[in-house]
Length: 435
Image (cartoon, rainbow, N blue to C red; front, side):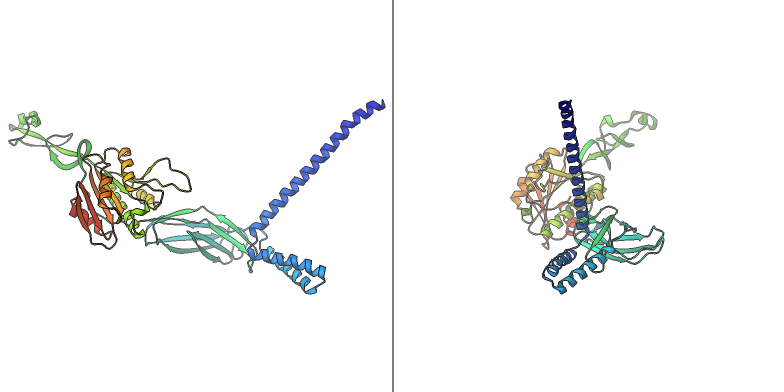
């Protein structure tokens, strides 16, 4: 009986010990998690000055009590009181509600965009002063909001200038509570980040007449022809008209030969190739002018109802290779095209203009007119080599951007090279070239 009792007690004692160990481990883990969570919450609100004072307080306590220096003890207790008073400013949650609205999400370079900020008090008590920050690109707009009564509202409108083409992230709005000294700070984020598109400057240019090809599936035009699909009217027979164009029923009614007239249908597929390699531009001003030229040509073609493709090199960013060598920008509407042009920038990983044309000629079918937009460093031989990658019969026009140069036009074989010194020269140069 004794042996049996010992045998049964052994496993029971082991189970109790294992349960105790598990309990200790569980409590220790929970305490460690709570300590880490608490430390993170404290670290998130303490500013650098707060850490410095906390360090001084700790050192002053140790030195003051170990060395018996009353001055250090006084400094330690004073610093501790200051830290506690600063922490008291963060007690409770921020009850303000902050919203931001941008009436116009798209502006042109040099124009101003209005940003409306609204802070309200939805609670049933008066709220104290609070600071509101609105990140605008790399800068921050700071507002000191006064105390708000129940249901009160604070509104302010500030203006930013789109100094450079690009996409400017605005927001999210942050309400910040802090002590007067700046030892601790707690912020709360509202709304979401909003992108403001700063479009390149574009100009109105005349309609581009070059590059139209007769096509039965094209768009009817105002020019009349004797054979096509879009019927226009009947007219009297003129010597030289084809007999198959005679409308016999009308001839029988009128007693005179009547022939059919049709509206000529045409098709035009315009492609604009924008260079992105840094060696193809001498200055940033040249590149910005090239982007404006591409935008002006693209928006004019879209307004004319022409099929257009704006192509640039696909740029490798952050060490991630692009799955495609070229990128086709959106041409659904002028605003969508200009939105995409806000994001293009020169990059050392970009393909050169000739390679972009070679890939684009394979990927974009049925092109009838191509514009090559580049900087002053592009030579006539490199432009001719780039145009040689296109199928025969395609009209090619190179637009070279060279700030403040006298505009000119020259032909290199079948290639037309237009050099402009200002964006406003584009329309006159195109008319001179007969495009």
